[in-house]
Image (tube, rainbow, N blue to C red; front, side):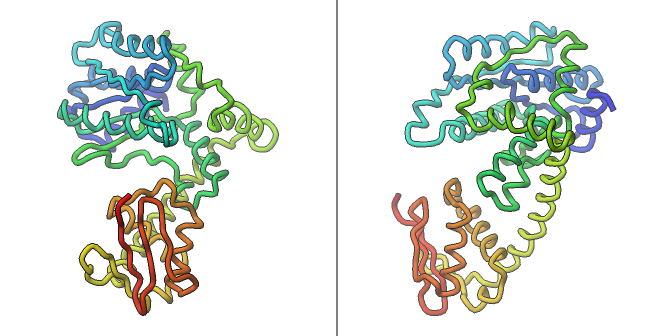
Length: 333
């Protein structure tokens, strides 16, 4: 199946006709190819309007500004009246003084994309993540010791905001196929020089480890890792459903701002289900999860089983066991 047919089939499965959508366009090959492919659906009457949304993270000086100018020029370059461009400048370095630069950039980018969708009354936001990106993400999380949830990596569709879906139509498409499409259509794009910086772990995975695995161990390593991600997401969905049932049974009435859980309804559950139940609690309460690694989730299991009396967690979350209950409370950060 060629890329135009693949995109048409994806959108037919995941999105109603005549919709308004936002495409996150960095200026690089993947997002530019996605934008160009989506324009084909405008011509077919399947998409009403597109907004090309670009975030200038202000990390590469004149190069970042040139990327922004390039994206803003695309509607006129492609002569599409139903396509417009918006951009936003975010000083990511200033925001990330005490945080991870890449995580802050990602968070701020998605926050703004959701705002653009609301402003434009769009029902979806699409990004250009491809199969190679997915494989890199799986490897990255595997090396960090992620569990089943982390190994699930990126999904094709998820909710970004109320009434707005986040879609990745190229997630099953390899980077080489995308480059061949751009070459065939003679479409220009920008190349981010920071993608060659081996100081970033993801770049080392892309430029060193994945090529090594492909040439010396498994020529189909990208497909293998993507299949692992699919299986991990399916498995995690089953675990999350079971953990949700445990949560309903174990949670007692709140005592003011204290969450209370019955130990006797958790003690016989597997450690995996208890960890996942507490992850659902963190998610529901909108508590910070970025630093909640396996060891920290396991400490919650130890508290349930009386192996430790209490523990403090990132975000000023305090957990303790008192008699037959486990109490969770968030204090001042």
